[in-house]
Structure formats: structure tokens, C-alpha cells
Image (cartoon, rainbow, N blue to C red):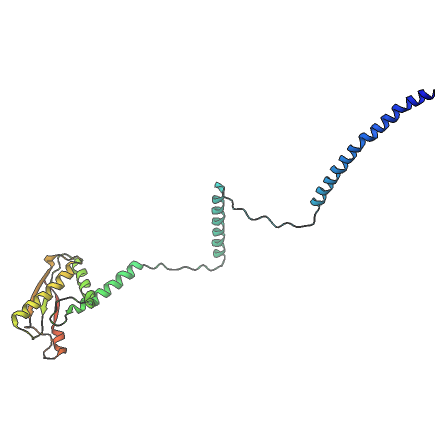
Length: 221
């Protein structure tokens, strides 16, 4: 009897311990899973505040049209405000072409009013300071191909007559060549020399001689 009881109780004890032993891994796994879930919940409930996300530019095809429509509506709203009393500045357009043309015409008229190119002693080189005179008269001829101009070369009274005639001719031709480089045709220009025969200023000093070493530009009908 005792053997039967002991034999019957032994499996029960064995089964009970087996169940107890089998429950330990389950409880440990449950504790681990529960601990992980607790950490996740705590992190979700954290009071640390994250920064706002950075703005993202919308590059979708329809975004440009939407922006344009928004700008148009804003412009329309501004016009409406202007109609309701907000002052709107109006600037009159400026014709820069007309101003430039008027300025150029005035400069040309001033340059053509001189119409005299002066030379250094015994020289027929056109100096840089008279470029404006040459350019203004060249534009005058370019504006109308029917216009003609006579260029007269002069010298002071120093030197022989033949020499001064040749020097006066070279001075007149230098001015003609400078003008032709700017557009006028050869048929529009004529170079002549008077040498020392037609002084602009009488006298024997340098002041008079400087005024006589010249080339004069005249209309030639």
C-alpha cells in the first residue's frame, strides 16, 4: 500500500515539478518582454521636446503654378487696396534713345561750329584733341550722301612758297583721310592748299603762327 501510494505520488510530484520548471522560462520571457514594452512606453511619454522639422521646398509640377496664382492674387489685392485709397506711385517712362540723340546732336553742332583743325609746326598729323571735330563733320556727311565738303590747308609765313603749298596740301589730305575712315565717300570731300597766302591772323609771333597752321572745313555746294 505504501509502495502503491509512494508509487502513485511520485508521478504527481514529478509532473508538478515539471510544470514548475517549465514555467520559469515563460516567466523570464514575459518579464523581459514587459520590460522592453515599459521602456518603449516611457520613451513615448518623454517630456523632451524635439525641434520643428526643417521646411521642405515643393518641387512638384503644380507647385509653380500655385505660387504664380498666389502672387497674382496678391497683386490683385494690392490693386484693390490702391483703388480703395492706398496711393500708387506712377513713374513716367524716359526715352533714353531720344536723350542720347539730342545729346549727340548738340555735341555734333558744337564740334561742327569749330570746323578748324590746328597743326604743330612743320607737321601735318591730326592731333587727338581734334578728333571730335573730325567725327562730327564725318557724321554730317554720312547723314546725306549729297553733301560735299571742302578742306583747305594753310601754313604760316615761314618757309618757301612752294614748300608751304605742299605742306598745306598734306594737312588738308590728312583731314580728308581721317574723315573717310569714318564713312564719308571720296566724292564728298575735296582737299586744296593755299599755303601762306590766306593767314587767319596777321603777325610774326608764335601766337599768330599757331592760328595760321590749320585746315578749315567748309561746305562745298
